[in-house]
Image 1: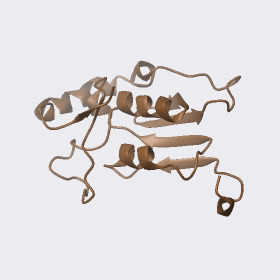
Image 2: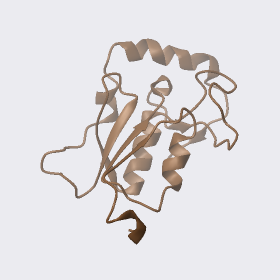
Image 3: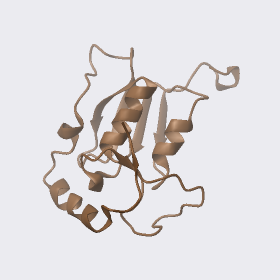
Image 4: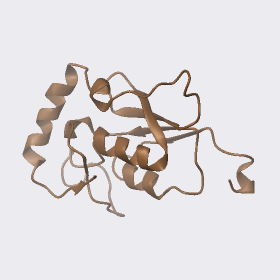
Length: 139
């Protein structure tokens, strides 16, 4: 950790309605213990991210064409050494904890479990008109 941060960062929250995935992917100066980050539940279980756009401003080309799916974000989290431990009621604000922190009390959960709210099935229908647009597939 850089000395200027005074020993580390406990929490980072990223919610910028667009390039959230790309910001977290590029973040290397700190490794917070907890990350809360917005995902786009309308993308459902598709492992996709809208391509990075340095000039992006919500709502962009379409109000539902932004951000990353919960699946893509969870894959990024694992790559960075984090585990998904929960989300808000509707599943779009996902919560990750750094591996090695609180593993005895904060167990990993599945992406499917955070998308169980009945509202999400209706929200995922909003993906249909934009399903063939350009996306980055996350492996």
